[in-house]
Length: 377
Image 1 (spheres, rainbow, N blue to C red):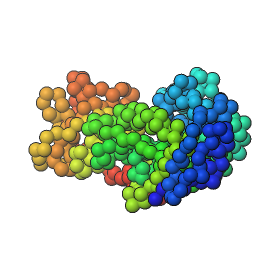
Image 2: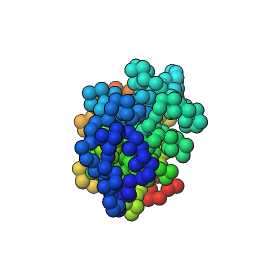
Image 3: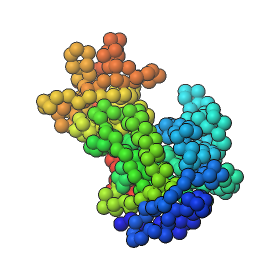
């Protein structure tokens, strides 16, 4: 079922366009939210909606570049400000640094708001910027009722999954850790329930065998840009269709914890391979060997031949390869590792100057699933 046009959206759209280009809202019949137009004209410059964008992760940068280009969506909207997380300690020196989104805004002299939490101060700032539409992607905070009700055209989120699967904080990591062959980006209305609003549309991207957060985030960021090009004009002209999410297919993904870095080598090799990719490059999966901890940067899965060694056994595979025996008897090949204080390097290079105590059995730790069928977990 498609929801009918809300009274709020009807009033906002009517106010956005001059009488000569009035939307034929009264022609909408039945349950569809699609709004048809008659001799619709482009809005006058003074009626073009002012947009605020809330984001903190670099995944939003291609989309912000699109919104900032005057020759692309200028006839539909004006980017008036950015909301991002406050500066946080970062790097080995733990010096305070802005988010990449905040840095993007500062470089372009776009008004920037960096609150610890979205409160009355944020509401006042939104009104000062004449915010009419609030867009969100990977911002990192829950958005309360007063903020959601402020923009007259509403508030919409570019969520990095094919909703209703992977609602929550870590959709990219959860998708990589799952058996899913694809994921994507969904444009949805923000409501009180987490990631449960109606969707305007979505775009899918493939998950390849060696994809980590880096590669998949790049795909998703460009998908978000394409999604905006396709659906923001429809949203602002009133021709978009809103589709309720299928409640029978909902799943949730939780925030990561420090213990998620450890691995259970009794799991199948492909499960371990997916988990390592899901947490790479940050925070990264690790294993303990003596008094040292090694970070696993990338892996591969060996052939289907069965090894009868104990799960977690560290083996030398000529020439200059290292593998861990997984619970299904397959080899989990270590492609790149990182030693404390160092950088990720190929295992073949590491073994030129170092060695492992071959035959050692690495300790296993329980691995909690990143995806759950219900919330809270």
